[in-house]
Length: 217
Image (tube, rainbow, N blue to C red; front, side, top):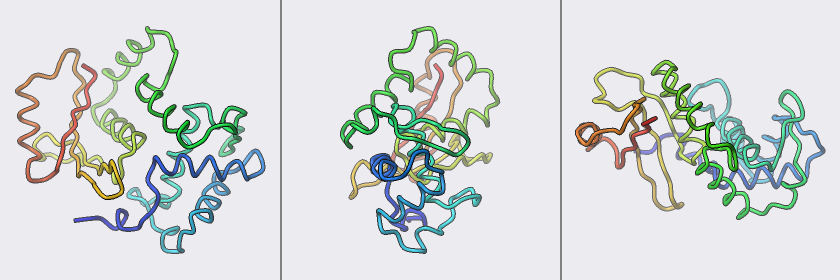
């Protein structure tokens, strides 16, 4: 069963990254968050209902939520940069990027942990920090990672009795196919064992199409 936000027909994250960069090139630098959100809505031709639909957290619209993640992705690849609180400008590099460049760099950034070309020791620093945070904080961070990777409708369930499912989301590799996905978070020092994988798989069969284990191990 699809949710209201799935049926709203808003652009998904890969498409939004390119759309956001396109509209920002047309705005005066620096541009405010609200200006960028409005420009994206106008460019896509969203209806009033689509613009006003609230996100799952009920604190902002779904459009503003998604465009904020698009900006975060563009910032990570050097296409835009912060110009102050809630202000952004397009970089010289960003003005020369096309949609293929944006997605290629985004994939590279995700593969390299968001720090392409960085020193090798940063990974151990990050892992040590991740293993020290609260379990619920790691779950929310994992949900943010999935949203940045292009998942929609990502939510942390945070409920006992879920059989090891820490959250759910929807992955759409194409416009015609979607997979309801469960995820489990494990702050392990070593590898996740086969038994843990089997237990998790058993917990989401019949409730989700796929499962992802996010681990520091």
